[in-house]
Image (cartoon, rainbow, N blue to C red; front, top):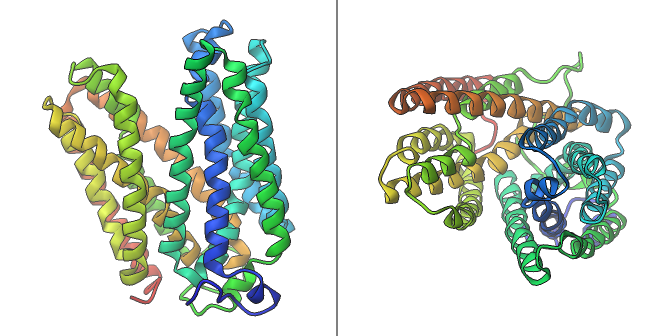
Length: 407
């Protein structure tokens, strides 16, 4: 399908599905530029206003809980109102408006409120955004479409923190200009969204004109398909065994395998691997179907096996494997949801899926962190066992909805 080939209707002459995916990915690139730039200095910023470590932990934790938990509300709201563009724009607006003020409020409680507000914006927009993107990827290929979006997203996640760091260096640590400059890409986010909405008011037309294996009819009782719940179980299991980069970097520094200054460089390298893995598995997903998700439990077990060694090269390799697993989590996992759930319930499914991922991430962080302090060999064994369970649940998912995609 050429770049100008879209679904039926007036959108066909206006914008093809691949152009829509790329422009929407550019929106995410710019938005990540803004909020990842701010998140890279949230801790030091709050500390400069008098926050203790406890306050920083509570505020950032509350923000992440809001970013995931509130999607249980925003997802069904999007499906019920069908105002996908409105919710997406409102969520992005809240995020890009919150960030520039962080550097100038000068009061701890206000800064804390803005940190949480930025994450609330993500919760408002994400189910609607993923649903809009899922319509276009029905024509481009789910895996490739979500992968290109994720790759563009990661470019912003790299540039934003680097710009903030440069501005802090130039201004002697003044957060006002460092975060104020992020207002420019924030304005660009909103301009692009309004333009994109005017060009493609009904992205679902892409999906109506595409021939895919996506279920098109909503179950008569309004429930989500059983395959979705099996898939959510698989995702919960594989995420529960997934160590955080915070724990990986803690190991590297505490075992004196790497100087603290090199940790951001390793993280940046992991983000590059993230983007490459997303593109590779996205292409493979469109070619071979959900069987490619077998790679995720394997990589998750590999992170535990490699990253917690006392050999620098092997531990670094484990961190890069972590980046590859993240790439699959952020792209192909989301693509599969769209192939399991009909359009009328998809935003609800994305909201519930985010809740599952959030709860599993919390459990995984606690599990791997606790086991790390007790016994690393036991940590590796437990993670491997959980990934075996995840593989079994993936098999259940494929049996419940086979084939999800035509190989």
